[in-house]
Image: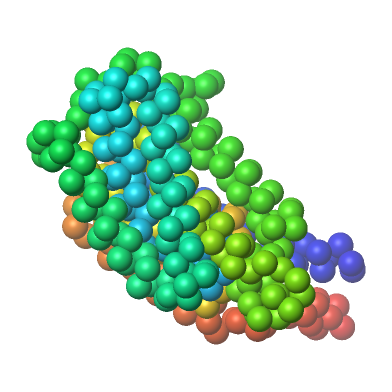
Length: 337
C-alpha cells in the first residue's frame, strides 16, 4: 500500500502531466508529418528556442521568491553586441569576450536585484525599466562602434560559429548544454540549503528573516543567476546565427514567463520546480515547431500556446491545496472495499 501511495504521488505531480503532454505532442505531430520524428529534425528544433530554455530555468528562481524578471530579452541583445564589439573593435579573444559578456549580464542582474531586494522597489518596475535601459545601451554601443544595426556584427572565427552546431553522438551540443544547466539548476534549487532559502523567501520573507536568513542577499542572487543565464543565451545565439545584433531576444520575454508559469511556478512565490519549467519549455517549443511542420503559419502558433497556458493555470487553480496523495488513497480504498 505504501508503494502504491508513492506511485500515486508521482503520477499526480504536475511534471508528470507535462511529460505525458510532451509525449502526446510528439506522437501527434509525428503522425501528421512523419519527418517530424526523425531524431536529427527533432533535436535540431531546440536551436530555435534554446534561449527560452536556458533563461526560463533561472527565472524560475526569481518567481519562486515572489519576484518577476522581464529584462532577460534585453540582456540577450546586450551580451550579443558586447561579444561582437569586444572581439571586432577591441581585438579581444573571442572566448574572453564571451566571458566578459556573461559577467556583464550578471552585473545587470545584480543591479536589478539590488534595487528589488535592498531598495524595495517593485520587481515589475525595476525589470521593466531594466528592459528598456539595457536595450538602449545595446543600441548605443552599436552606434558608438559605428555598426549598422540591421546588419549587426559578423565574420566571427570559425571555431566560435561552429561551437553551436557541434554534435555529440548525433545529439546537438546545445541540447547537451541545456541538460547540463537543468542538472545544475535542479541541484541548486532542490538539493541545497540555498534552494530552501529561495523557497522560504517566497513563502514568507519576514519569517525567513526572523530565522536568520539573509533574504535580501538571496533575492538579489536570483536576479544575478537570471542575468547570467540571459547573457549565456546571448552568447550561444550569437554563435548559432553567426551575427551579433542588439535586437536579439526582443520577443523572448512573454515566452519565458509563459514557460515558467506553465511549468507550475506560482507567480505569487513559494512554489515551483526546475523540472517543471524544463518540461514546459520543451512542450511549448515542440508545439510551435510541430505546428510549423504541419503548415501552420507562425502568426497563428501563439493561439494554441495561449489556450494551453489558460487551461493549465485553470487546472492548477482548481486543484490548489488539494492533496493528490489523499485523493489517490481514497480512490484505492473505494475500489478495494
